[in-house]
Length: 478
Image (cartoon, rainbow, N blue to C red):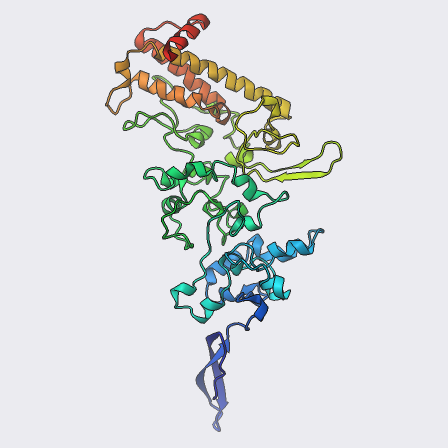
């Protein structure tokens, strides 16, 4: 039997049955090569697209079965239909809902769907991120032909997620680039031992057991917290394709808390204070120095942002999306995605959230506090914020004023057991983090109060009056 020759081949087992004169059936097994894919149009420039559009089977999926099965249930697999059913489909949108140059390292825009309008390139398939696959399927054993995707994203929009996930209607990249996650100023921590497990992509993947292959995996240039660190391009097990859930109140499981939990309790080997205690503080567990006779209880954390009423926990406030319209005309202005990761961001003149650190309290948005259902309106949320931060700031000042009277020797012990002064100093640092008054105001205030009482009792100090408080703080600063 003559075997056909094709460009891309797979082995197909055919069973041919022949009826004998005796009525018995003899089976002869014949291997026949069949095309794995149809040659792509010349204009597509090596992009393969679907081998079976109805089954949502990209050519890549014939071999990469696991990745294909995961990808099929993501939003990328239905990107074309989503666009057509949106009511606003236009030709300039198609580049981000099909296979082409967006998302990978190809520079020529006239490739894939843009060059052919062939339905085989509809949806955001494998090649949208990995680049054209023709060289790889024709030379699968050639390492240089493997089209690895890049996990880099940048404001230049030359590759990666940001080529599509940007702009006024979905400015994920635009906001991320201004955030602490995208801040190039943190580059020094990305490969530093002890820091890289949270500040750099390679370290995070190692810490989380993520063995994914990507273009920069074996490189040496530091990589920050890019989209692919938090989002899994192939998997939709968690909402928004996050690598870990955001609604589980466990510091080792919750996506945000896997990093935001460092040095939440005093470290006997370090004289430094709290580093990123937000997760444990939000949940009201394993946080702060425990003063003598202090008992953690549900009473202390009742009504805070870490309770069951706030199912999305950190993300409720820190990844809060909202649409901004012109208050006079009602016209669309901007669709914030929450990827500044600021819960009460400063607003510009149009009401668009910014990365600014300092602004008047009246220029901040408290919308995230209302959409969560915790506060009736922004005014109530702002009032609660000012009350909590004010009360705790006063307690921190009082505690620091007392600590200024404690002998220096009480802060230099090398024992694993902290002195009262060392523990109280740690708690003062915890209270001084402005967000502590929001993440858990009741527990933070209780720790401050108990620490003040412990220092007064341990060192025989009198309570600090308002007048002496100012004098003591002034002396300490001088």
